[in-house]
Length: 276
Length: 307
Image (tube, rainbow over all chains, first blue to last red; front, top):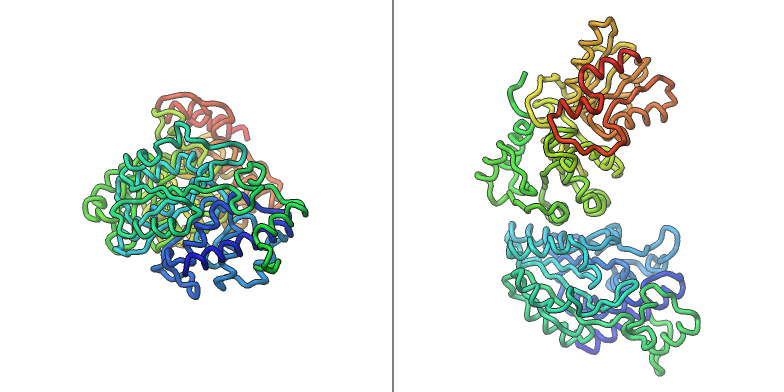
């Protein structure tokens, strides 16, 4: 898929997320938009090896998301890929419908999300199984930067480095905001790349909203000999000017006026509204 | 009496399983057992020492299992349950992943290592997990069978293991399926227990006999689920039930039996004897810790005689 097609997919995902949040009054728009471009790249740019006609194909790459509150972006992508019927997508926010977290009853979902700090360890287990069976499948774990505070993430980092789990890829959505606070380059986040390398990981940083950079970094790690941690520098609320870097948009729901402004920014003047 | 330690009985079967099934993987948080050494030696690619990182051990087990591996994880009972409870809840149980957790050190097994090592709260905590199966084998033959039941299980399993050699309780296949065995014929007064304490309960019943009090003894091999047959075969034939355990009285075997009585609307007397709801910072022999909790032979005799 061409860069402009990926950008178009990302725009449509953002619009669909916006409409769902506005319609249901529920969702985490800021953290969904910070990883939207990453998710679009993973699913549409041929990074993830999977078969959407057979989501349980045993040799597929596994993608696990720790920040499951970004589920709406995945619901939207899965619907577009035909994994989820449109009618099911529309149940988001309803009793018994698609929920605020992902679970494995949904085709394409590998893991029941909701609690932080687990996906890197589970992905490490998948990478360990791949190593044992000499399979080339890869295990990807996308985490929020706030999630890195969980101790279990570091247990996985130590283990994967020591065991040279070269099929493991961690991705940090570095949007620099947690639910209530700023996550600056303090003692925890400064020199992060060096920290990872000292644990025998490869580590790369890139702009998580630039498709050329995203594609380039995944291309570079194709033949990694060690686990890889990718730091995607992102912006919470990316794509809507008044939401970008705004802490209230962790789980804020736009008012009707804000929604209309957001819609205009996403759709553009010359395009039709209500695209999904 | 079998001369095998219950751990060895269990791990000898694990060795057989590992030899037969190349997709079988054994993880440990740096916990050893004599009979595990040959597994490690003969099947090195199926054995991983994770180090003391229980949360990661459960997560790895989940990942391995999601790729078709059959995984057993092993550590001290108190750590492989409480330290990584949320990992078990979310990453194993919520997806019904067939991983077996083996916790050694039921009750006060690790008596001298203090309350951090005491396995007195694991039952209470683990039984809140929907659909998990809990086993507590009381002799080596039940421990051997337990390894296979866990291996063949379709969902998450927790096995709590004692340490040491115990007289055989002579479990048959039907009794294993029931999850309990009447190990001393039922009377009006019956004692329900599990593991190490079942053998103490048998001694207690002997002591009661000398005081002309007759008591039956029931061993609970499976703490969850407890089958309906327990109601018909034990509860409905009892006038008084006594539970004896070196687990917390909050949520232990006494609670399990109490819930069965309440749910069935059975109004019989239930006396629960176990570890009191009190901070317990003591180090010593299991016998001494039992004394402090009224679980030694003399105290048990005194409290049950008056029931």
